[in-house]
Each structure stands twice: as structure tokens, then as C-alpha cells.
Image (tube, rainbow, N blue to C red; front, side, top):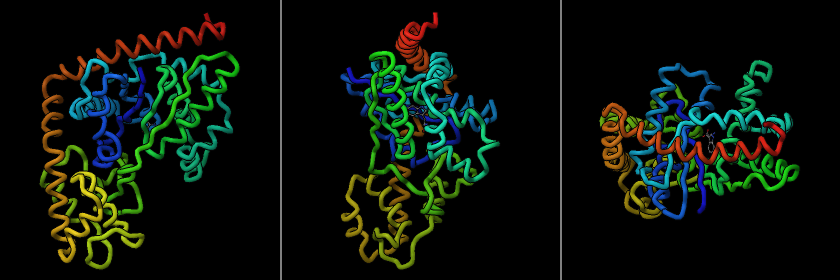
Length: 330
Ligand code: TRP
């Protein structure tokens, strides 16, 4: 049985970028009975930005509700909360001793922050973030780790840590493969197509949130920046239209060429109206399901978390016990 592990960070509201880049496939993926899927909420990772405790709690449950709304709801798929499985923290400490500062210094997520505001004031948690991520993956003998392009480097590090440990102590960890979805992996901000649509943004005008209502979606799309000219087409000089066409193409299941042909001579206005319609139509049923889950006293959410916790603990505790025994920690 193939194991697939992925985490969806509970910081900020999920966006259409998260949906198109990864989440929309999760329901279907997790339905495969030959695979065991673990989708967990890395709420310990979220501490690196010190979120408001109430917000962290709500966002974490919201992430679970979204997973269920996307159709991750099977006997052999598991949703769990990272902080409820203490083995993640414990294995992190152990793996810290199989990871060098040189490796962590090279992680672009940390490097970028350190370059921007200096390394001295950065939190150790942020620095160590990739090791916690390695523990998340290695505890479950994951075969595959579906991630966004920006997280690939962390999975490569996980492979290096696993290999190093195995070379010293025998065949303990399975060495995982990152799987990066190329299509839709980089949905850009509607106000600034040079930057990614990101759930950590404070200004939402360029991000479509999964919870946005129809009016908001229509407004954000009609105000999305466009490129000079009036032809609906992609191109290196048309980053804004390329982004909008990509979104449309994925949601409509049509190729970019088909869409370019369909909108020939029609201008940006008509194209944006149709795009807003299709975004609203796609999100409406998911939102309905999501709101239902969030309002029903969390019963479904709790049940899913219990189902996931049970299986995750079983595997994680066994792996941790094996590691501790090998290291003389008993
Ligand atoms: N770091 C990932 C992100 O920012 C989230 C994450 C944490 C994760 N642990 C993981 C993803 C393990 C895959 C596997 O999106």
C-alpha cells in the first residue's frame, strides 16, 4: 500500500491558488483504495509566525473542514492535527542531530527571511522548520509527498536526512519522493501578477479566498489588473492575462488555445465576466459543504480528527519507538 503524506498549513485563509495548485485533486486522489493518504494540519509549524491562539485554533479546524469539503472522507484516508501526535516533536529533536546548520542555512524560505531582516533575530523555530517537516514525513514511511514548488527543497532535505540516518543505523526510514503539480501550481496575485496568490497576505484584494461570496469574487475579478492591449491571450509580456487564462483553463477544463480562440475580438470585459461566473460556480458547492461542517458544532470535524489521530498515532508511535531503541533511548 502506497503512503502519501501532505500538510496544509493553518495560517491565513485558503485561496483559489491553494485550490487550483493542490486541493482540488485531493478528494479524487484520496479515493484510491490502493493508497493510504495522510492529510494533516501542521499547526506546530504555524507557531513560527506566532498566530493569535484563537485564530490558530479556528484556522486549524477550518483546514479540516476544507479537506472534508474537498471530499477527503474515506476509511483509508486520514486527517489529523500535528500537535495531537507528540511523536512529531520528539522525532524532530532526534533528527536535529542528523541535520547540519549548513543545510538549514541553504533553505530558501529561511534564507530569504534572513536576507531581508537579518539572521540574528530570526526564531530557531523558523530555522528548524524543515526538520519538523522531515519528521512529519518520515514517521509515516511516506512514498510520496505532494507539495508546491516552494516546498520541494524541504522534501529534498528530508531525503538527505533519511539517507544519512539509514546509512548510520540501517534501513529505518523510507526515502520519500516529492510530487510537484506543475499545472496550476503558481496562481498569481490578481493585483500583482509578479507575486504568488498567498494566504499569508494581509491585503486580500488580489487573492480570491475560498470563503469569498459571489459579490466579492465578481468585484475582485473585475478589478484584477490586466496588461496593455485588449487581446485575450497569454505571453511573456502578458503576465496578468496569462494568470487569468490559466485559472479559467483549469476550471473550465479547456486549453488556453481554445479560450484564446473563444475570446478573439471580445475584449477583457466579457472574459472577466465569464471567469467570475466559473469561479463562483466552482466554489459554491464546496462553500456550502464547508459552512455546514463549521456550523454543526464540529461533530464531523471531530470524528474525522479522531479517525485520523488513531491511525497516525499507531504508525508514528511505532516508528518513533523503533528509532529510540536503535539509538539507545530507552
Ligand atoms: N511546509 C508546508 C507548507 O508550507 C506544510 C507542511 C508541513 C508539509 N509539513 C509537511 C507539507 C509535510 C508536506 C509534508 O506548505
